[in-house]
Amino acid sequence: MKRQAIADIWRHAGPGWGDNPGIRSITPIALAGFEEASATCHGGIAVVCGANSSGKTRLLAALTTAVRDSQTTVVDVETVGIDSDKVSFLDTAWQLQRQVISLSGDVTLPERKAQAGSFRVKESDLRRINYVLGDEIEAIKLFELDSTDDAPLLEDIAEAHPTAKLSVSFKEDVIPYFEVTARGLTRGSLQLSQGELTVLTLYWALISAEEGSLLVMDEPDAFLSPQSGRRVFDLIAHHAYEQKCPCVITSHSYLALSTLPVDHLLVLKTNLQRQTIVETGSKNALWKVLQVGPTRRVVFAVEDEAGRQWLHALFRLLDFEHSEVSAVWNVRGESNVALVANFPSGGEADIAFWGVLDGDRRDKRNTGQHMILPGSKSPEAVILDILKSGDARVMGQGITPEKVEEVLAAHTGEDPHEQVIAVAHQLGFDLPSFRERIWTAWLLETEDGQAELTKFGEALSAVTLPIS
Image (cartoon, rainbow, N blue to C red; front, side):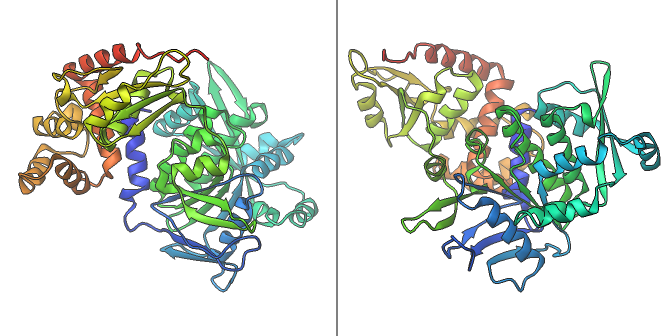
């Protein structure tokens, strides 16, 4: 999937969610081990993250019960438009076991398939599944078979764990069965890897969701590779919006969580009394509770927040080899960038320092280790020039030159930053995603942008790590 398509998915799941059914806030009231503190939820997806034993699954189970039964006093959940009879708890690990239990050794499977019938996954969904798996699947057939689970066994499992009863009740009358064709070979569910079966089971659950329902998922990325684990959240966000079905998810995969819009995170922190606090996420809180983070070897100083965001986007577009060990500081001003650019970086220094100036500083004399962002103006002024050009390749679907011209005319004479904010909000974007969308399209789709991207890539190639 293209970056612009992914950005649009998260815009729909976030600022573009509008009045669709959703959860507005979660407040543990009498949940064991939790402090009573409210956390706000945004859009159609909330991702609960925290260290092991922080209470992610307990919170999910309590939330599920609370939305189903508003009389519960354990967790207070503010919802809009959610049908309490359509709340589902999906434990991916259990669903995979259940499929194996139901399908293994069943000599009547051909008859069950013939009786159930199948449908072929449509091309657009197939592309998304291939994106998540990194595969080239040619076709997928999905069957919904009558369940043959052993009822006494399910009852025993339901008593064994606090969330087991919620898990076994998810679509308990049917079992999904998949036939996947790739490179000329067709395989059934029992021949698929756990990763493939996980993604297909999630797809099945998502397309089965009804408008006004709530889908609660416990670690849907647990059996996936780091790349697939990151991408599966894009698949969930897409179908959440398509089905108008909000989702609450748990995960502690920092590789996935670090790429998600921070507004969608609910971070579980532990206080000095060993109680868990639920709060709306931030990147700092995420790294702290997961207790991970690479050692920084390179520091880039930029003039403002727009420069910081653009530099991160350039790292991704250019696949900058040192991005994982690089920090970007917003030092607020040209003079401070120049100061950092002249920090000592050779000899025994274990961090390399670089100053990164806006394009309008290109003709000024600079000292120390420095580079210039693409364009001949500030990042916000570059965006305004792109918007005024009316180039459809850059603005993309859903942004008309007429609408842009109307908004800009209403904000003539204002600071470029304020003008860009006005356009973004009028078009239904949050500011960061709008900036990145315009910059990225310009760099990739226009000759001038491609030339600037190549030039900045050459500058980045000069960055080396200090000798350890």
